[in-house]
Image 1 (cartoon, one colour):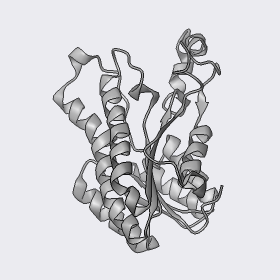
Image 2: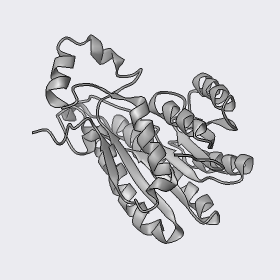
Image 3: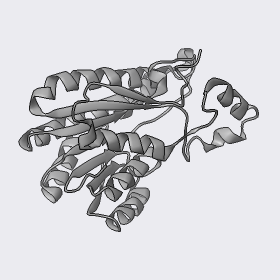
Image 4: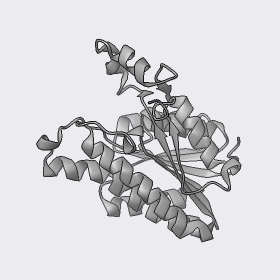
Length: 249
C-alpha cells in the first residue's frame, strides 16, 4: 500500500502510536506534518521524517480552536494540500466516577474529542478544495467495553466513533472517507509500566485470545490501509485492533 504524492497530517505525532503512524506513512511515500505540544519530541520526529520525506512539526495546543485553524493553514501553505488526517492526540485516565472533577472532564474532552472534531472540521475545508481525502481517528476498545475507572476516556472514545459516523455521512458526497481505528491494549512507552504489575500479563492473556499486547506497528498498518486507495469504499466504520478481546466471552 502506497501513499505516493499524498500529504498526511497526524495529531499527537511526537510519540507513541502517532509517531509510528507518521513514520509508517512517510515510508509509504507520503509527506507528513505532525501536531503536538511536546516541542523536543516533535522536533526529533521531524528529523526522522525528513530522512524519509518532506516532514514538518508544528507545535499546537489542540484544545484551542484558533490554534488549530492557524496550524492547519500552516500545513496547507507548506504542502499545498492535505490528503489524510489522523486524529491521534489523546490522554488516558483512571479516575473513578465519584472522583471526576470538572477540570478533568474539560481536559479529557478537550484533548480527546474537541481537538479531533475541530481539526477534522478545518481539514475538511482543505480536502473539499482537493476533491477528496481520508480522515482517520483513534478510538479505543474502551468505547465498547467499560470498567469503573476509565469512564471519561470511555466517553471521549465513544464520542470519536459517533463523530466518525456523522462526518462520514455528511462528507461522503465530497469524496471524503471517515473511519476510526479502535486498538485494544497496545504496547507503548506509556503502557510498558503495566509489564511490572504483578499478574498483569496473566490477566491480559486470559482476556485476549491472541494472549499478547498489540504492537504499535499493527495499529499503524490498519491506519495505512484506511489512508490508501485500498479502502475507497469504506467509510463510517470503526475497525477494532484488539487481538480478539471483544469476540471473547
